[in-house]
Image (cartoon, rainbow, N blue to C red):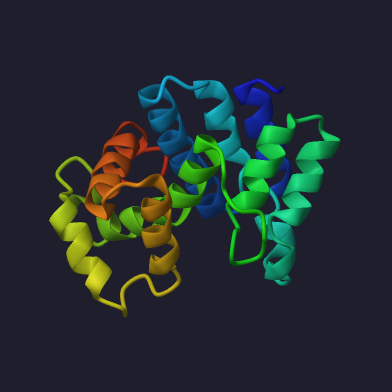
Length: 190
């Protein structure tokens, strides 16, 4: 398995857009947070989160290929099957029929879209920070269907459901997971 620095270099080999790198960093932070909480392999979960969308810039025009190209890249690079399968499963019901089974797969599925939504909520707040962001602010924006239209709320809700967690609790924990990396993901700047 690659080191975190090697994984970051691999991500940047395939992704040039700053927002894609920031999204990868956000998902990595959430995955590390939950791995630590569950006493799982923090580096394995983190690198899986970091590389989950490695193929996004290649497959944007053909979204049905998303996750499949990424899984192939990671397989060819010698990543463990559990990482390859997690990458495939985060597109479950969208571009993949691989259902999340393991805790790592379920969390990746649940936090992928949610990190983007929470980031979008923070960006419209004064100070653009997560430090004072509350669940109720996220839920208020959740109800506004015109806000962050590209975020699939159904996937997030289904993710919380497969984790057996209330959505509010998942939102709260993802906010906490992202706080330490807010500068790296483009937040907290006035």
